[in-house]
Picture (cartoon, rainbow, N blue to C red):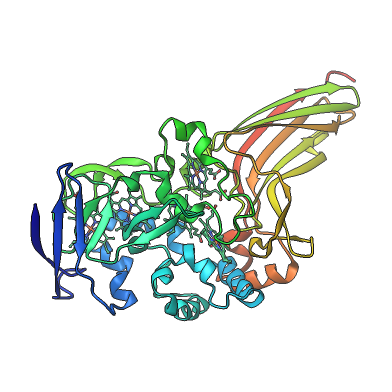
Amino acid sequence: MKNLFHVTCWAAGLFTVSVALTLVVDLAGTVTLAASEETGKSLEKAFPHSQKCKRCHLRVFEEWEASAQSRSILSSPFRVSLERYRQTSDDEDGTLCFRCHAPSVLEYPDHANVYIKEIASGDPALDGVGCSQCHLISDVDPNQHPPHPVYQLGRVVFGSYEKPVDNLAHQSAPLALYGQSQYCVACHENLPGYEKLPDILGPWQRAEAQQKGQHCQSCHMPEAFGESANGERNRKISNHSFPGRFGKVRADAVKMDVETEVRGKESEVTVTIQSLVPHNLPLPHPGWSRMELDVTILGKNLRKTYSEQRYYERVFGDQHGKATIFDFEAVSVLRDTVLKPEEKRVETFTVPTPQDAPSMDVLVTMTYSPIHGPEDFLKEVEQRAALGRKDRAFKPVRIVQYKENIPLGTE
Ligand code: HEC
Ligand code: HEC
Ligand code: HEC
Ligand code: HEC
Ligand code: HEC
């Protein structure tokens, strides 16, 4: 069956261009649309700005606006590290970083400079990872490592509804891909060109969650019921705030058990951490990303008598074998303590038992660490952040805390 469609342009009303599209419906009911290619289309037209989608998808827009994805070229750490990368590598255009942080550049490589200028301004008018950068992905090539997003820059937005309601702004086509992890890993698996280093996500395919049919979307785009477009009937929708380091999924990151054995002057605190996450935790990109496990003992009058920190991180080595927080300078991994997918890790701490105290408090806390690294780098990040040291990059984010009071008898 073949049909000819006339589709009005993005943001109906603003443009009046019509494009001929050929709609092919095969027997299985899958729909493929072959857009007659427009050549020389500007980047802004090929990748309409998220503001254009807001008019009809207010709920989705507001969720996305609150997400990390909407800030993919905004943060001060990104701006500072992009510049360092451009200065220290052969890739003056920063193409590597744009591959995931502003993937329109994949299709418009000559626009890298426009992005660089926009990003330096701190208030870019272009989207990094906006609606179009995601919904124009028509395929992910699994034969490349990392898997590569394939764009189809026509009038069709791809999604996962079997029967999307017709609208005046765009054609829609369902793709199973949108419900699958394969879609997300195109930007989350590894840095292209760094295949000798272990993947960012770790062996997520083998995780139990994945085997049980849970995809990235199951946890990071939790399902709800509501309007997909303004005024349409309620149906299954997917949250677009992409909870991760921030947001609700954090409560499900790890299960922690703590046992304390008092043995006279010394005590042993055993912390069992069960990661519930089907990928590495934390994800070791950017290179300074790490989690901290802190054990603190409080004695008489809640005075701190002891504290010790352990880190879950991937420490990269540069070409001179020195540790670097910049993964783009890495040629090796010097130490890797990230929690592997669904790993159970047991940590033992030998701590001095507080003397002359009727009891002691054992406090065990797990947090995402604030940004760390060379002083000049941190200074620059601070200077470029609108909120200075108050920027979220400098704040620890708590994941879990355990607290117990242990009686010490009458010693
Ligand atoms: C086009 C590339 C791209 C695709 C596709 C993509 N992401 Fe992302 N994602 C990013 C970038 C870049 C960031 C980091 C934004 C920032 O903080 O600068 C990010 C951030 C995130 C975060 C927030 C992480 C945090 O620290 O809190 C989550 C969660 C996330 N993505 C999940 C997903 C899921 C689930 C999918 C698939 C449905 C997906 N992403 C698809 C590029 C992508
Ligand atoms: C393969 C895709 C990919 C590439 C290539 C990539 N990033 Fe990222 N980047 C991500 C994702 C996904 C996140 C979110 C990670 C998370 O929260 O776990 C992220 C997070 C970040 C962050 C922390 C969030 C923020 O915005 O402050 C910085 C900084 C960053 N990347 C810098 C860079 C730089 C600089 C380059 C180029 C050298 C680069 N990235 C290349 C995917 C990528
Ligand atoms: C990181 C990629 C990504 C970004 C950014 C993104 N989406 Fe989505 N979107 C998806 C995926 C994947 C699905 C399908 C989720 C599923 O089936 O579980 C989806 C589903 C949808 C749906 C149907 C379900 C629903 O919740 O209504 C609409 C409409 C939609 N997106 C619009 C938008 C708009 C508008 C924006 C920008 C404000 C946007 N998306 C940004 C990946 C993305
Ligand atoms: C004129 C209003 C309008 C505008 C503008 C608009 N959309 Fe839609 N869109 C709709 C309607 C209506 C639906 C169908 C909703 C439903 O079926 O419940 C829809 C459905 C979708 C879907 C689901 C398709 C599927 O196959 O699952 C996605 C994804 C989507 N839009 C993305 C976008 C993006 C991205 C933009 C901006 C580039 C955009 N829309 C702009 C009205 C609009
Ligand atoms: C079973 C649920 C689950 C699935 C499936 C899942 N994640 Fe996560 N993810 C989590 C939890 C829980 C966290 C931890 C959040 C925290 O501690 O703040 C997390 C954290 C993240 C973060 C931010 C954390 C960081 O350390 O920077 C990103 C990005 C992310 N996941 C991407 C993905 C991608 C991509 C997939 C698919 C390959 C995926 N996730 C599959 C549960 C899940």
